[in-house]
Length: 208
Length: 208
DNA sequence: TAGATTGTTAATCGATTAACAATC
DNA sequence: TAGATTGTTAATCGATTAACAATC
Image (cartoon, rainbow over all chains, first blue to last red; front, side, top):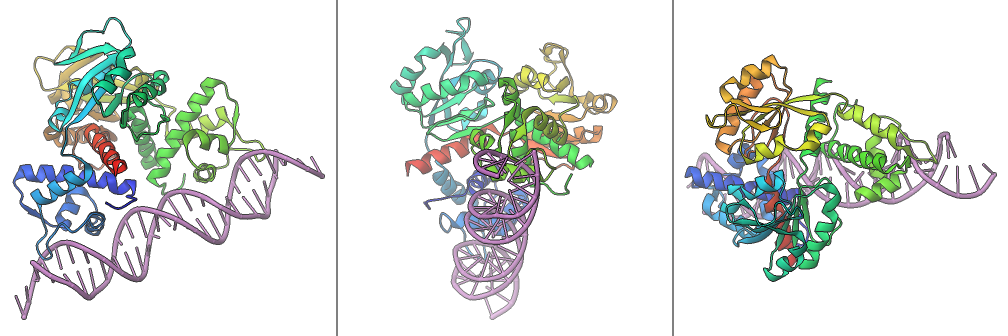
C-alpha cells in the first residue's frame, strides 16, 4: 500500500465499496469505470486513477468484475474482520447507534455502552447491549481489546472520554460531539449541526 | 457574495462560526487569525484568505472582534432566521434527531415527523413533534412553507421521499440514508457506516 | 481484426501557503 | 515610532481530468 493516500481518495474508495455492495446485490457481474462513475457522479478517469494507487483490478476492453473488485477494495480498507466497539453516552444518539442494525450487519460490533447517569446503569440500551458505569470504561477497553470508541456524550465531556479511551488502548474514535478532539489515534467526526449549517449556507447562496 | 465558493471554504466557514460561538461563550473579545488557526488546526493565512472572499472583518495589528466576526459570518452562512424542518422516518435515528436539543437552540425547528408505520401515527416522537402519515408529506410541506427535509428512512425509500419533498417545495435536504439522492436542491449527507469505514481504513493504514 | 476499456502519463485546474506591503 | 497583524498577491503544492498507448 502506498505511503500517502489523499483523504479524498480514502473517502471515494469507501464509496466505491458501498456502490459495489449494491451492484453485487443487484446481480451485476461486470462494470466499467464509466458506468461506475455515472452511478457515483464522478469522472471515470478519477476512479481508474484512484484504483491505480493499489494495483490493477480490471481487464482492458472488458471492465471490472464486481465481486472481485468488491473483495479487493474490502481488503484494502480493512473490511474483513469484526471490529470491537464501545459506545460512550447512552442518550438519544447513543441509543440510535446501538439500535442501528446496518452497523452490526457490516461487522461493527458494539460490546457495551457507558454512561455516568446512575438511572441508566444496568439497563439495556439495545438488545444485548448493557449500560455500564463510565468509570469502568478504561478497564473494559483494555480487558476486551476494544478497537473503536464511539463518543456520543455532550461536548464538554468528549475530550475526557477520548483520553480514557486512548488510555485503554483504543485505536480509533468516531466522534459525534461538536468538538475537535485532541488525540493520537485517528478520529472521524459526525456533526449533525455542522452539516445542517453547511446545508443552509448552500441554500442561501443559491437564493443569491 | 462571490459566485463560486469552494466547498472546502463553506465547511471551514461553518467551523469558524462554531469556534467563535465557543469563544464568545468563554468571554474572549478579540482573536487573531493565528490563535484561531491554532484552535482549529489550520494555517492562519488560510483563515484570512477564506474570510477575504467575503470582505474585511479584522483590524491590522489587532485581530478580529469575536462578536463582530461571529455576527458577520452568521449573516453570510444564513444563521439569522429560523429554519422550518420536517423529519421523515420515525425510527431510531429520527427519534434521536427529534430529541436533539442543540438543533432547536440553533434555530432548526422540526414542525412534524412523518412515517408509514400505522402504529406510530399520532404518537409524539419528541415533545411537541407529532408523527403524521407520510402520505400527507407533500401537502404539509407546501402548506407550512417547510424549507428543509431530514431524510431518516431506509435506503430503499429515500429517493421517493426526496422526490415528495421536492414536489412540496423543499429547498434543502439532510440525508441520513446511505444513498446518493438525485435532486435539484442541495443535499448534505450524514452516513455513519461510511464514516466508520473511513475510520477503519485509516486504522489499518496506520498499522502498516 | 475491430471495438472497448483499462492503466498511466502529462496537462490542467484549483486550493493552500508563504510572503509582504498596508496599516492599526 | 515600533510591534503586531491584517488583507492580498504570487508561488507552491496537490488533486482532477484528458488523452492515449496497451491490451483484452
